[in-house]
Amino acid sequence: MPRADTAFLFDLDGTLVDSVYQHVLAWKEALDREGVELSVWRIHRKIGMSGGLFTNILLRETGLEITEERLARLRTWHAEAYNRQATQGSVRPLPGARELLAFLTDADIPWAIATSGRMQTAAHNLEALGVDPSKVPVVTRDQVRHAKPDPDLFITAAQRLGVDIHYSLVIGDSIWDMLAAQRARALGIGLLSGGYGQEELEDAGAFRVYEDPADLLKHIDEVVARS
Image 1 (spheres, rainbow, N blue to C red):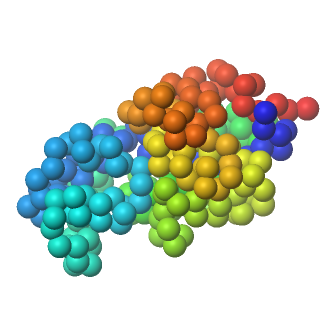
Image 2 (cartoon, rainbow, N blue to C red; image 1 turned 30 degrees about the horizontal axis):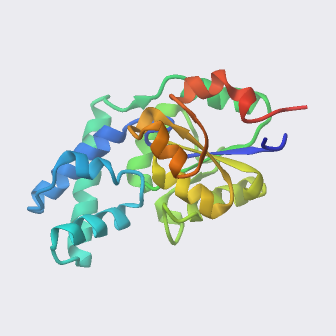
């Protein structure tokens, strides 16, 4: 059981905000513009890892040449497509997300957000959650050397909170979150709200698995105890 001084380190897309499938469609649009033909399900299976690693893997699987210019175009087109969806109101907090963060704040339990997205796309999600990056530690892909499944994002988030990563909980919705948690030597808690199954998350190292933030809040005593 985690210690009473546990910190919560949250992924953003699919964990606190219902945005995974918007990212899938945005990447699909970007890849189509680049002439890369890939089925939507293949894109979904890689959502949650860093954008650079994501595009490298997809291009390598299709046999296309990986160039910095091509990667930059894909990132730009993905951001444009995603932000267009976000401004149309299709990106919303997941059930219980705001309530869970408010509960942790009221209970003086430290928490931070660590996302493999860049601030260019994360800003809409943070605004939807009502999270002010000037008051809450928010670590984006722009700020670390490597993103998920490397542990850099979560280690940096723990450092900004001033807590030991080994006593922290990584809350995520993908196998990449759980792999990053293991590499950081933190406990991983999986949520089904990103489209991965319970067995997949557990096989990747999830200590517990819940449906969404509301379900996690309902069972909060199972993952952290306060004196």
